[in-house]
Amino acid sequence: MDAEDRIPPAQPTGLTRRRALTLLGGAGLAAVAAACSRGSVTPQGPATPGAAGTDSTASPAAAGQADCVLTPEMTEGPYFLDLDMIRSDITEGRPGTPLTLDLTVVDAGTCLPLKDAAVDIWHADAGGDYSGVGSAPRNSTFLRGVQMTDAEGRARFETIYPGWYQGRAVHIHTKVSTGGNEVHTGQLFFPDDISNGVYEEGTYAGRGEMDTTNEDDGIFSRGGSKSTLKMTRNGDGYVGGLTMGIRPA
Image 1: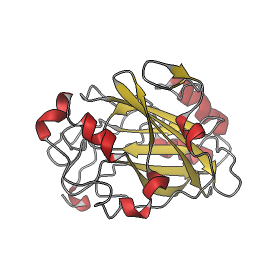
Image 2 (image 1 turned 45 degrees about the vertical axis):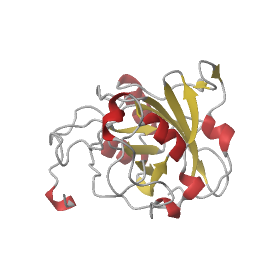
Image 3 (image 1 turned 180 degrees about the horizontal axis):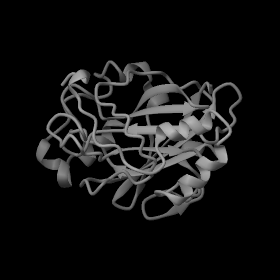
């Protein structure tokens, strides 16, 4: 489906991404923080799971590669919808292996964490479908959301492991905005061995093996390890962490 053929879902009420970015561009930073705290789930503290069944206080993003390398830019893709949904839990009941996405946004020039950056993500469900496009209902919004980074530069999302679809390696789309301006568009990838294990079980099993590995994906080659999540087992799911270095507005 071409981008021109997409009909955006109905806009949710409450604080929107567009409104948040407008406030961030001016003097309304405190209003954004207050409105987010009254709305959906906000980023949690640094209680990031470690090995299976255990917890640690270290973020995989911070403990993995907390160097301030500029995160590679990648194509937005055809399925972005400007839904303006400030929320942490984006599952909306979609079945799949639980995934906590733990991202840290830093200034690539100074290595300092960036507070109040808007992190926007969207990805396919276990069947390889995106909400609001294709065969999904046009007013659906599953697996899409925005979080504002905290004082440590962290944004956390509760979601499911993305399903694969033909011709692409497994991935999550992301945008980052600071000061009211979009400053990064990219994609986040997963280690192939973990994806293969996930797809052997549960709601993913009936679809078989993914048809495109990271090595065979031309978009993955632009980012490689700099855009690959550091994965940690967490009970029956995973935590995926990454430090994203950007040039703020």
